[in-house]
Length: 219
Length: 222
Picture (cartoon, rainbow over the protein chains, first blue to last red):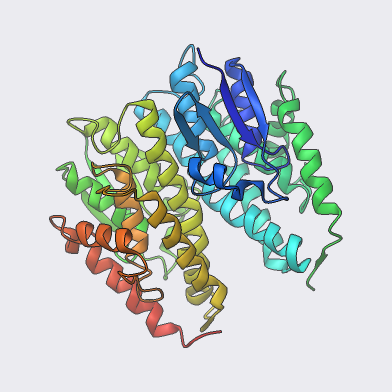
């Protein structure tokens, strides 16, 4: 098997779920840093492989695959010993998929990316951004109402996707464990994964980057 | 086969993506209207089925699934005669998945919802120019995703990525036109999509509805 290459940057929320998935699948890979703060994703070489110029990106032989969710689904299908991380049953898969699209839409594109844009440019955050993040926490709480994991009773790639986002969003809104009981319990459950450091290190870096902006919240 | 019910509203792009898919698969279904502007998605009954209170939602023999992309993938996998609309080959599927997540995040949240939500929910009549620029950035990306002589978004076969993308793109044309000179491939792709059988009833009419609704409320780009 040719060695995989993962292009990414640890603070970046979408990169870390792929690292968690690769660790869970015990698939070896080379990590090639693409520093998005220094705009390295805009190099001609990178653009040829990924015209959307985002991280993460996976290289598997000739194949260049991007979008964290697409990468994880690919990895489980191709390298998984079984389908537990991404169930083949149509209904179970549909639930995992919905959580993944919740992450790429409501969580990443809106709650994370739009908030980051304010914080890293104007450094003044409109209050509604914090409300949007609270709404994410509320929805997570409802998804976890009757199950230990985000898409049911077992760990899936949806948990990897969302733990990275949530552990990054705490830079903006802390998670009060009395208000979000299920969410707090799920976070603790995820932190117990033997390979959780693949997320923790980058999450801390992201939080530090946010703190260093000294952003203020609009009254 | 159990009964299929699609919950939605015509103007909603993700609902229309599901309609295109259901039709392509030759599936019969019941359509139930959820009046979003009247807040019907917040009804207790609906919330029990879908705590995210969004449309579309699919009920298949009593089981509830939501998010248009998840619904479309489910329908092809469960009811498709073949895997053309959503390839089983891991690499080919990864490309469809990437386009679908691009639609979910960059296009739908980033452009459609980011513009429509303040307009309809908060009655804002002015739209910042940056939000229009964001639409053109999406068009730039789509133009690059469409390779030379490539018929559809993921190659020469139509996939659910095309249905997903066209539902949103067609809804934004009132705010950002696709000039053929600037976007030759995207423009050709849109023409191709509009020529699909039953395109008007599944997507075209609803897209025009959303365009008109936005046009009626938005007075200025600032």
